[in-house]
Image (cartoon, rainbow over all chains, first blue to last red; front, side, top):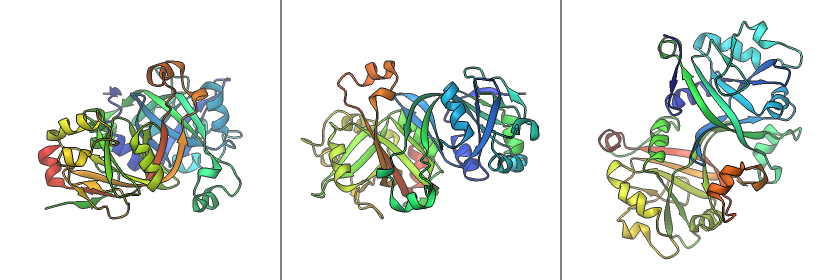
Length: 177
Length: 177
């Protein structure tokens, strides 16, 4: 069967559900061509400027931040149920000193429209090109949020990624999501 | 049957679909207690800071902008199929000189957690409290987007509304969405 192109809205509910538990896999790539993957539990899907958009939040301290700044794109990959250990691992170690693709036997497949690859084992993949970014402004963040998430002043940058294509393997989705 | 509380994720796909055609109804209220409704075709649903969030974009020239600035909350209402003329009307005239609730026989029902009311006739309603806002930064907007949407430099403010509750009438959804 393999993967087919689907409308960006289809499975957005499923994507949000899995994002909350166990998380999604955000893939980026540096100028050197080496991809990295991090786990994300936050993100938004919708429309702005008539474009389908996936917003992700990345702290400047993350290796992924450096990569997205270098190449200006990313992919969001929805893991299957049997990949929760991968998500946990990707949320624990940094790509600065780990090749998580290799260590977790993830297969990086070239994307159709962006430099960052997609993860073959993930049933749903979003290819996104950054069309806007904004650093969270400390003065506008509620105090309780600030003390909970920003004791080190490491404020996220929000990357607005235009969703250029969504791939989905519907058989895998039925069996493994 | 009436409305029940549902998880914020449920019907987010449906909401995005209707947002794109014919649009959603964004309700706000001023200090004077008078509600206003505008049509929106853009918006994002997701999670940030572990909170469910609905992002809406409002230009400073809009009457809704003044109201959200005054009270800090809004509701997003998903119209039924037979309300597309209402959506069109609400996207055409301004609340500064029109009482659109009255003119379109919309019934404003008090919200549970925010000052802005919800629209009774809409099968799904999101109650949102602004927890973050950011004005779009011209220098970060792609040139083609700028010339298409901002010839008058009227850049949107993005309001991040924490979704405090979602109401849905599942019978109405089945019959009228």
